[in-house]
Image 1 (cartoon, helix red, strand yellow):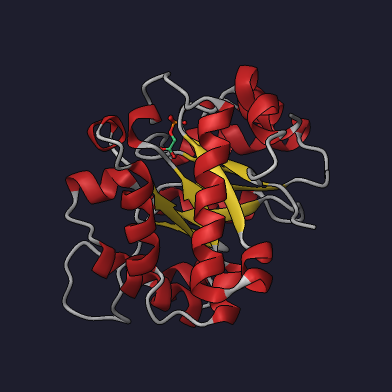
Image 2 (cartoon, helix red, strand yellow):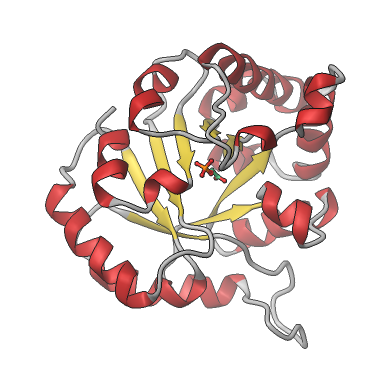
Length: 248
Ligand code: PGA
């Protein structure tokens, strides 16, 4: 049985002061439930949030990291640095990074390996553009991303992976995939894990849907058989909205 996992992706929003304010309200609303939850915040907010969430089961995530251990990479953050703060998760390969910051399947793959070396659980994002969907290529695109991104990961590593299916056309657009579309693609991701690693591994992988998830559509999405959780952007910025999604 997979435990539902709902993570917030704050992207480039909130100062540290605003993050701490969020955390204090969120903690008053948050009740320990069977749903796992995490906030993936900008780097500069992580240490303050770690402290603000201490003593609770709310986990912490980053939104990116470098694949090298250390070195002359101005402006980058290493897994070791995240590990020191006590970060549990790191989003890897978000479409905004693929689109605007030259992230490729090759760098995504290297980052996944580095996460596992440091016991940081990656939330790997995959998904197609609107053009690819309209051309009937959604399934092919996601299968290729899965094959390339997971290259040379062991079965034990893949079991721990979180994968977020995020159709690019549904991110921040208010246009959510229908529960059926989301379910179908999450099912396709699981079947591609079956092909690559077998049934037993595929049963353990958590697969989230992401793209305009909000309080009004969370229940329907979360009730779909293949969907184990959600990666929530805009609606994770307000504690009152995010808590409603967690309480789906
Ligand atoms: P959204 O973002 O919920 O604002 O569409 C989701 C994401 O990019 O992870």
